[in-house]
Amino acid sequence: MIREPLEALHSIFGFEGFRGPQEQVIGDVMAARDVALVMPTGAGKSLCYQIPAICRPGCGIVVSPLIALMADQVRALTLAGVKAAALNSQSEDAGETMRAFRAGELDLLYVAPERAAMPGFRDLVQQARVSLVAIDEAHCVSQWGHDFRPDYRRLKALADLLPGVPRLALTATADAMTRADLCEQLGISPERLVVAGFDRPNIQYRAEAKNRPSEQLAAFVRAQGDVPGIVYCQTRNGAEQAAATLKAAGVKSWVYHAGLSPEERQSGQKAFQRAEAGTMCATVAFGMGIDKPDIRFVVHMGLPKSIEAYYQETGRAGRDGGPSVAMLFWGPQGVTLARQRIGGGGR
Image (tube, rainbow, N blue to C red; front, side, top):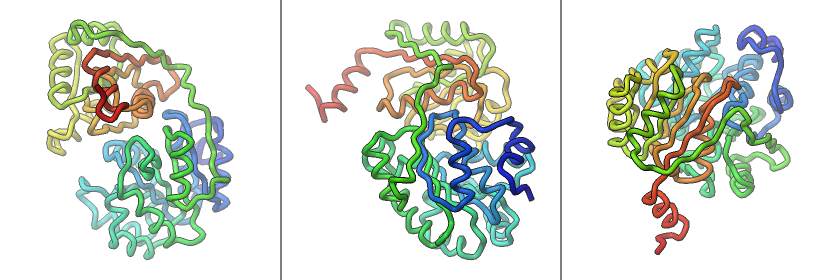
């Protein structure tokens, strides 16, 4: 077993050195200290729990609300020789996963917050050796955050069952009020808060008024060349129309939204993940998460619901550090809706 974080960074992940606060955070978790980390999307948050989980005795539990992202990370870790598995609503081998967890055969176990909140899972974690509890998208624990999920409020009780096991809360988007609340809700001292910078200098941000949105979308995507990208739409129908528009323009495209069957979503996600070019058209509401570092552009076909959501969604571009573009197409209808949200109904 690899015990040194730097060795794991080199041999498993292929990086020469740590970036930003990674080394500090990993060192704290290795020493069994709790950490609340706010770090930009694409800056390497995942390594802050993956490396300690590999290097510390036991299995690291990672709570994540994004099933697609969970699947991507498990797949990538498995290919790298790390023993990782997931428990969520789409798990087909839950029994074997729980057996491997109890037997100490896993380095990382990803679990959905709904599953983590169940009494049965609390019983399960007490039957195995746990190295850490990582709570990804930790802003979801706060009612002040932009994506509050009630099941996150039950995660402190889970972590409290494991005295001496470090807990690591991670998010890319949390203002001062949300940061204070997530620390309180997860039982992490405010003194253990680490806030990295938010700048993503490799992403160029653009905005353009809608005139003929289908034509504008096709022209923008064609201009990017044969590269992978994401188009966020506000409705399922919008995602379907965007994909149809791009296919008609000769661009390979897929659709991802809650109206598709799990098999259809997984098939499209896997194809996009493996492709060197092509566009995924997804609904903002469904919150598609995907761990693909070479996404070169993110398009929003309407105003996002919040600046935090916009930052997080555009942050899926350029995770490899390469130049990328975030394009926002806006229209009067979106501006009116935004004003209504701000004013609690508006005029």
